[in-house]
Length: 331
Image (cartoon, rainbow, N blue to C red; front, side, top):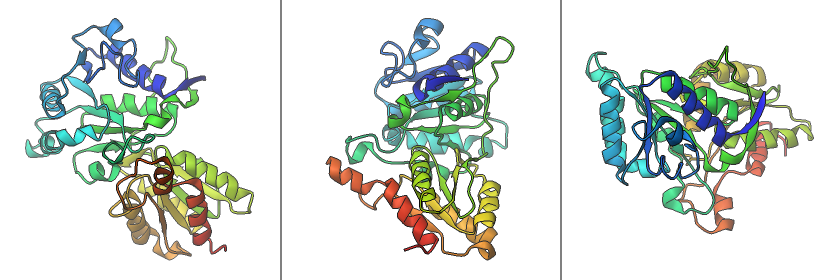
């Protein structure tokens, strides 16, 4: 095992897939000459050249449409958005072209494309650059939506996404890019480390309550679980990893064991991922619930710029602890 940053894990995933398949290419703003706005694509231009690592103009709608056309023609584009907030300019292309083509063509035309980049809040970048789009994209049939936490999952899931024949939304988090985790080292016999899309992971087993989170909120959930353990509450933490398809089975199996459920997400509460998980629990585990499902989410306002207000608006470890205690009827 090697300890690498999430930034390096993403870069390695793309490089390995580009070496294995000449149809894979990367495009986006500043991905080539500048080595990526967050240095995710560092070294790719030097290794693969300008035909496979392509700088684009600042026109998300335009280069997204170009990439979708390339995917329909048999290539495998990896499109980097400097932030998924800018992908708002390309929603028509992503939803009406990429997501629906396979269905509308009766399965005759596939669109193997990955849209990746940072999602959610960073640090004081304002309301227009801080939105979490997990529930937006998860609402769309035809899209797969991935939001990993660890470096291992970033690498394995991105490789799996590039090989997938469907359009994949790959949601990263800017704050996590510098975090280090253990990742299996590639060797000359096996360079095929993949993580299955659609499978959640229990990152901390427990018996008293289930906490379901994804992306950067997994860290907050784990921190909360550690503090709760010191107070006698044994929390199980599930890292969703994939938002769509959602791993219902892992969630329900855990809830049937713990009988309590808390969901955690960085996005807004209305029609969020937590709402869907609560509905699933009601449908498949209602008789096992000893308390109502509790949702932890961002405050229902545009994210403030001021540091103190931004912290108040985003879910914190203390909010998760409070939610768990509420679910466990602990004062």
